[in-house]
Structure formats: C-alpha cells, structure tokens
Amino acid sequence: MNVFGVDIGGSGIKGAPVDLERGALAEERHKVLTPRPATPRDVAGRVAEVVEHFGWDGPVGVTFPGVVTGSTVRTAANVDAAWVGTDAGALIGEAVGGLPVTVLNDADAAGVAEMTFGAGRGRSGTVILLTLGTGIGSAVFTGGRLVPNTELGHLELKGHDAEKRASSRAREDEDLTWEHWATKRLRKYLAHVEMLFSPELFILGGGVSRKADKFLPYLDGLRTEIVPAELRNDAGIVGAAMAASRAEGAG
Image 1 (cartoon, rainbow, N blue to C red):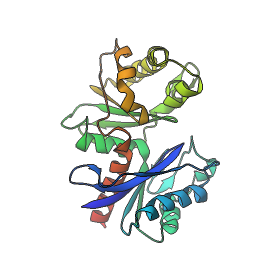
Image 2: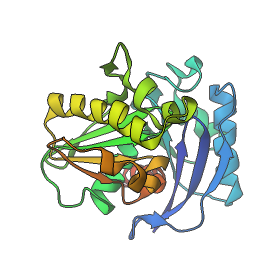
Image 3: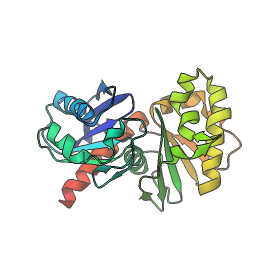
C-alpha cells in the first residue's frame, strides 16, 4: 500500500508516495524550496504543490521541524514564529483540498522509519537518531518506543544552542572542513548527549548522512556505536507516510 509523505525542512520541502511494505519511496521525490519567510500559509501552499505534483488523492503525512502535539505546532526554531500555536493539520489539510493530514515532528518521523526499516531495526536499548541539517533534530527510543518531541538540538553547547554550532548548516555557513566540524563540533555534541542518555546507538541522518565517510572516521573516543541512517534523507518522508497510515487505521 502506498501513502504520501511530505518532509518540511528549513531549506526544502520534499515528498513522494511511499511503499509501506518496503519502507521506500514508490516514485522519485519532488522537492520545492521552503519559502522565505516560512510563514504557515506560504509553507502550506508549497506542501500543496508537492502533493499536487503527483495528483495524489488520499491520506498525507507531513513532518514539521519543531514540537508538535496533536496537530498543533508548539515551537518553530527554523521557520517563521507565526507557526507557534497553529493547527498545522487543519491548515495544510485546507491547502491540499481537504485530504486527511497527519502532522508530526520531523526527527520523530525519521526515527520511526529508521527503527522500522533502517539502521535501528532489532535494537531494543536506548537509540538516538539525530538529523543534521538546517538544525539538529532528535528522536529518542527506549525499548523500541519513541519518546516524542525531545528536541536535543537545543541543548546548550559552548553557550549556544547545539544546533547553532554542530548542525550541517553551521559547517557550511562557517566553511569548516569535515575534520574540524566533526572533531571540534559534532563529536563534542555527541559526547554531551552520550553523557546525558548513555545510548547504545547513535543514528546520524539528514542530508549529510550520504557523506558519512567524510566525517564518521573523526568521531572516535565515544562509547556509543555510531552509524549513518540507512534511509538517508528519505527517512522523514517514509516516517510521515507511516504516521498517516496509522492515523487512518485508528480512524
């Protein structure tokens, strides 16, 4: 069965139908740029563009880069502050012509996909997925169960939000070498998260995961096993579709 997933990011909005038997995209994803400013109605309009590109007429799962409870946005670090308090499910549902919409945190969606189809399969201890992109998203699992909306990218590191120093965007904006970013920024952040949670596995996702060979060798000295996300940057789309499918089943 195919269900549609959309992943809203700080720089791009991408989506595709997802084959939930395989946990893989059923068609090549379509991507549009995140509007600037990333206001609720403008972003909802771009989501509609992605859905309409495929002529989709069914349930839609949508990730959001912030805390989501029910379908209401509670934080919005890398999109417009007007999102806070917005019923994203209702707004996006209206934009896509009344199709049923399920909204969840972006890293939580990616984490669920990785635990089901990717690098976290069969792992029952504490597993933490971190998406390294415009910011840092996090998904924490213990005993295979998700602790939603953890937002570990906002832990303090050197007096700043960790994502301001250790995200992929920070590496690009400051023109850091892979080695410098990995050893001076990312490894210190991972050590801090390790100290707090003692996980057995870190899964590193986001767009940068496809270049894991450029930085993983520098992340030594940690007790925790570190692997790249197997679904790479498609994990959010897959997890969004999984959430929409579950919501329809519950309904």
